[in-house]
Image (tube, rainbow, N blue to C red; front, side, top):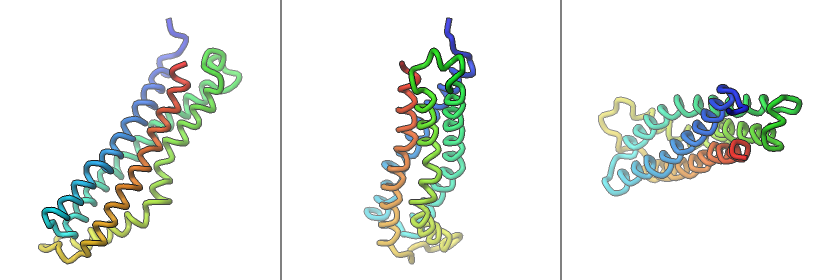
Length: 179
């Protein structure tokens, strides 16, 4: 019989699963979706304004789901850190420094939220401005092709880095989960 409560095990599963899912979701945007938009622009001559609009749809969906998953996974790690803090019954049966390990996992997982604001905001605003100029436009070809292309490449790189934060959070948590 396990010494851990169901809520503790659920928090482990939600934290680890959420962090890993979040990382995969973000990385898929960076290595599949955005490069596909760039290819459409470069090889198929898709108008830059249209490509920026398509990026906006991807961005809007990610903006709704990804921060929520980061908060859920990060909060699960924070709960685990609190549960195994020094002086609790669980602190006696978990690997040494588990509270600190779960705290680091929480910080890394939450970290994708401030990373977005600190490092991605200028690129997001540039692409959003282009996308918003072409709302309802019959022609989306007047946008600066090179600027949109460069912004997409920068966004994919930054987003790829951002996706590593919850991945690292999940990996760090495994040190405490798998003794």
